Length: 355
Image 1 (cartoon, helix red, strand yellow):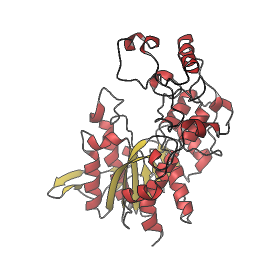
Image 2: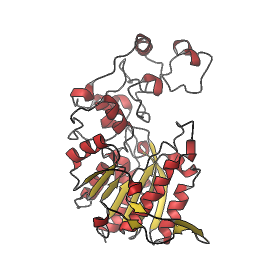
Image 3: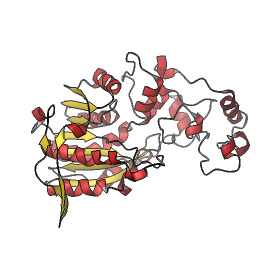
Image 4: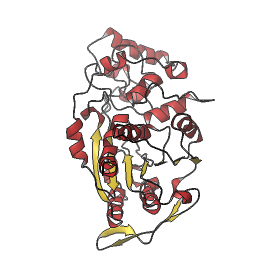
């Protein structure tokens, strides 16, 4: 496996679990990310043969052309060091190219962000490495990218001989205690199990947030630390303790910009105990950035709890030298929940490994 845009390794965990359940081990030939701190965590937990701090865009040269059958690569991509040694050795390339340009939370560039081109670059890298299969994940809005990256990627992969499928999966539909939707594009030279088929196979009712959080062990250290709340935030948190049946903060208790009304009622909201945890973001420690108030306590989630919600198992160790809270919230909030990576990877691993 080659793991691109790997961060701390959330997607990798799901792929590894799926391979293990099919009776196979997984060897990570290379893990790539521009975040050296994230790679430190990745190395400590997942032991890649090489960890490369750098951009995927510097590892392949390619040119896309458009013809009668759609987009395709003009010629075989040129793989550059340090990836050159892995040509022909890769069963699976995975990755989550930067999604900020596609997210609805990005009000400046939305789906015009030039970083979206890294999505197609990852496809070119997979084709140039002659990888047998590919898994890319992103936010659901990538389907409406200004650059049409999903359509371009599909056409280029199909022209190169891959079978391709893509779909938006929700972790809650798979029985997981978080409502989190991600888009997956899967491709394989050996055929693909349709993602819709896998969703039907694994469909289950999710656990409510209160029951799920109540059963979690504590990781300790910085992962158990909460921010120092302002007096205004403490007042808002205490409102929910005094009003057990309320889940949206009244307008009168919100910042001035919300007092006359807002369409973001989930901001400063409390999780409903009988529903899955809402989608976590990098702002899960801040009530003003989403519905992140604990369902039964006057606080937000700890990084430890958020890590479990994203599927990081008990043995996964984030405790690296000089770790910062902003690192934890980014790595955890941006991660792909393990159940999503697990189910999506079965789409290519079953045909590839069971033949």
